Image 1 (cartoon, rainbow, N blue to C red):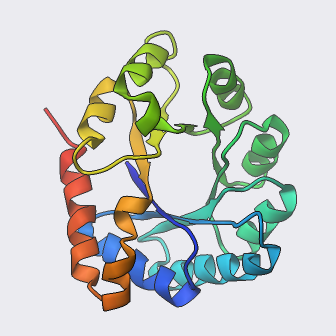
Image 2 (image 1 turned 120 degrees about the vertical axis):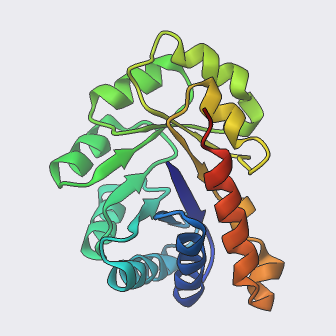
Image 3 (image 1 turned 120 degrees about the horizontal axis):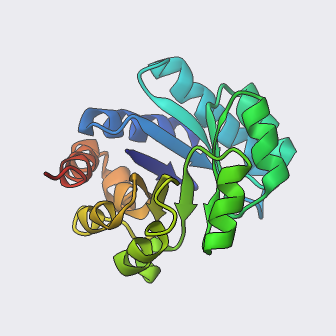
Length: 205
């Protein structure tokens, strides 16, 4: 399972990125909220709606960096199917699940991971996984093997297999799927190729 993370792009670009990801085999897309600029939240909603309307059930789309119930509702109203948070907020997780969306909160410690899972999280995001390394994933999943973890932060085609082998159920990938030069040049096939590499490298015998 791979979640493509889109941050800081206009809705039309988000849709083109989602199309490239889908072409490469990724069918989960997260469009993040910018907490510093609330005026951009309407763009997040517009991007979620555009992706949902275009792909319907072929691509699962949701909102990332969700911190409040207001942002959760914006996601819901736009047709979002899941929320990703950078932190562990049990009440927000429970609200998300009660509303019928999938919750993928962020956690760092075993305590946070267990609390998130007990609150109803479908997956628990370990961030920043790239800084912590596969060794940390292996250590935390040993006693918590019942929790599906996602590695997020610094994940690339070169290291995704290491995190999956260490015990993650999947990964969230941002920067390696939003090369600004390729986007500016309209080189969507290159982005699709990276998506394809991520999918291929996440599978192993």
